[in-house]
Image 1 (tube, rainbow, N blue to C red):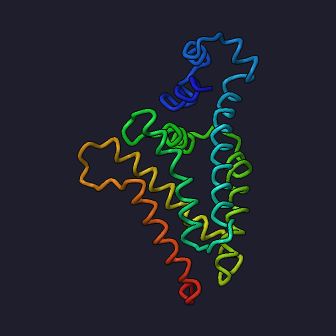
Image 2: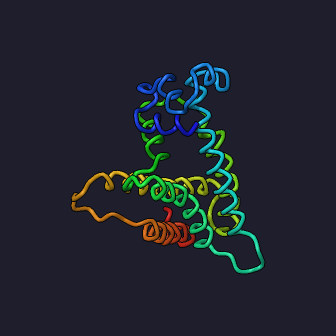
Image 3: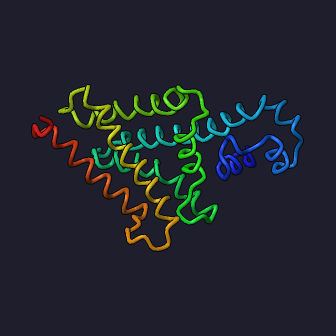
Length: 208
């Protein structure tokens, strides 16, 4: 799976062959077909591992922000979620020493441009479980929000995070593009502050 992930990241799904994966992994083609049932199912398995890891980390972060006897705040919830969202990707940047480039982000961009996963996989295994837990937490901390506004608020926060990570990767490939490259800590602080202010705007009738 590690070898397949690296090659899918580097060359994309179509331009990666089972023979290349087997050579990189030091096994034979028959082993891949036996254990995974072919390249398509191996690709799904690579993604499923990523999605499971990130889903559990994000749900755990939400539960931590909402548990305990101390005070809870919208900023605490958003910060805990945002850090968990960005930390695995930033850690992988350091691990692979690829300036501004995360293996997962590479896979995500390639999948968005040329999709090969089952159409409902992201929603079923990642988006829906996390949104259910995060939506309950946001609703608890922000009673002024209409239930119909909660998913929109969550998608807005997620959209900022995804965009910021993608831009960080893009700028990492440019030695001198004249655009400041936002560091992860700065990125999280900005998104938390910006999003919390926007969510509180609903309480002041600014959603009209």
